[in-house]
Amino acid sequence: MSRPKKWRRVCCLPESNLFGPLKAVIDQEDLVLMLVDEYETIRLIDLQGFTQEECAEQMHIARTTVQRIYNDARKKLAESLVNGKVLRIEGGDYELCEGLEKACGCGGCYKHRYREFSEADNKEN
Image 1 (cartoon, one colour):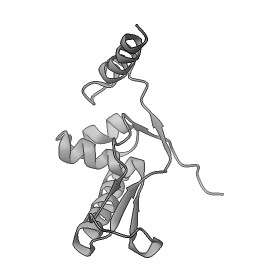
Image 2 (cartoon, helix red, strand yellow; image 1 turned 45 degrees about the vertical axis):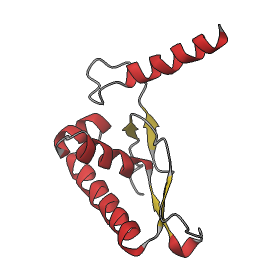
Image 3 (cartoon, helix red, strand yellow; image 1 turned 90 degrees about the vertical axis):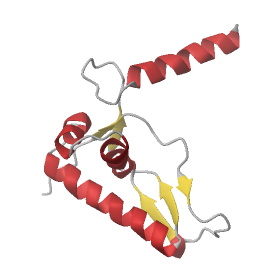
């Protein structure tokens, strides 16, 4: 019996989940599917400057798992860029960060959720 997958903690979903050539026709052959946890490793390591160890701690998974996920994500990015394929980000085994942990290293889960809550309150008033 195989071991169940561990849920990866993700701080936020991408604002846009579809990328590619401007005049692309989306079909299954020209579509690259990136999982949300793969997106999160790209965001943490390449954008936020985390090490793989810090990324692993943030996502609550092993560093070796981060390394595998990150390598898969980079291959998908390269395939999309080099071959002009549409990249869609969706799915995977993840849970969204609640933003309540003091040690949250994403730089603002709580602030992000608080800002959304505050903006919603202001619209009602």
